[in-house]
Image (cartoon, rainbow, N blue to C red; front, side):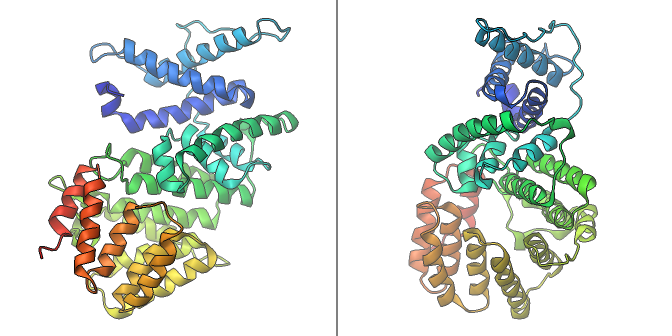
Length: 405
């Protein structure tokens, strides 16, 4: 979208998308999910034509909800024109709609609890419809190709509608069991990671702060509702990472973790993260991940013993949760304790599991190869820079990673 309004408030509109989708889903039901998606897009397009800097509604969310709701009603009226179904009552545009209740978490729980849909398909669907992520962004965090994402979302709509006919559910009153909570946590974790370290050329400052805040808020609501140990440790991860956001950028430039000024970290969030850290009854990946982040943030001058501690934590993490990204991170830490040959061997395995020319993979590999093959490392960095569209990250690599041979 080229409209300045959307450029300046892009992430807020993603949050609005999720609120609108959830609110309309609560009113109309899952059988009208396609109509709801179309209506939300139409309401955004209508706002582009009508809104300007001098003429904005007092309540943008309420305005969009009314327009989208009436659009859904019109679509239903057209679709059911020849049927005997009782029509919905059309709202007057001037009528005030109380759409203050945020049903996003309830909607995520509803989707996560459905049985005939795979966890991956649930995550993909929610990333698009609750968080308003683009297909490219979903590709970045799920490693699925774009065609597979389109097909997954389409298939999920059909599957949800089929199950909904059998299992009528009031979204506003649904509750979650531990299995569903686990899926919800996975979704929030994935979205937060997208916001915290974005490779999108639309994200000038690396971090989509509002996206992080939205997932943080939903995680807190999840913890308040169910008081799960795993959610507490997820909140520890969110708190600790968010605490570092003020130090990630300085004078418009990206600052690497080890060069950040720790006095710029948000100490209140840092302490909150430590408070959320909870030892679980059985080993859980969020607890181990939170320990890793805590280790990084509490040690100022790393020794080999500190790096060995992190290696052990990554090995534990791989035992409870497999991920090529976790293996990739472990490779970097192995190189820090002198196990470069092992790290490169694991890298060759990880490379087969990631999309071709995966940016983060290339950066980690270049770091590890710096000591053993500086020329190849330099070539890899150069290739990555040439393919990067994100200005701030490209400038960082040019200034800090290239070896002038």
